[in-house]
Image (cartoon, rainbow, N blue to C red; front, side):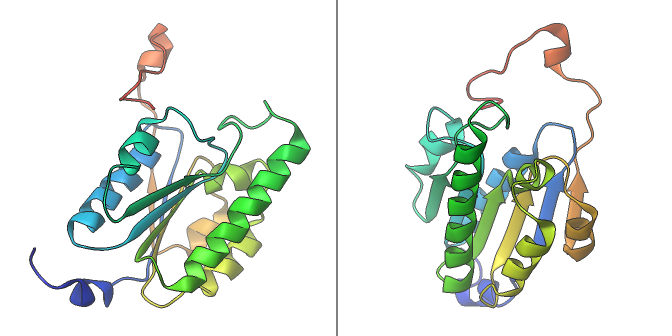
Length: 181
């Protein structure tokens, strides 16, 4: 490993957003998590809307040293579960995110699908920004999901929009284990 983790940690503290209608937002965040754990950083991914189950990143995450994954949702496609359950689970995910962000125990915090939670009206952008303002120093944060609101885009240090050009779904190819989930 080049450089010690303390030297690396001192350079952290930005907010990154991966959004858009194209594939690859969570995948990009997971690539960053892999890179960070390779450098000895402590990483957590809190998954909004996604239940604990057969997602490839959850299976791999349980095997990776320095990487914690916490699925805290009922269904990644909002509207397919009871609205009260969805609100309760989102509130629990927000409370856990706050706890993790202020703790200083993680160098990289990924809030997976939090943008979708805002898009669905389950999280308010100003509440998320206020929570991000309270994070421990040198805590890097990644926000993923479609439809990041303008306030989040303005607040973030890095924003990447994945643009859908072509997808095998258009030809009737269903989501594949190990590739899409």
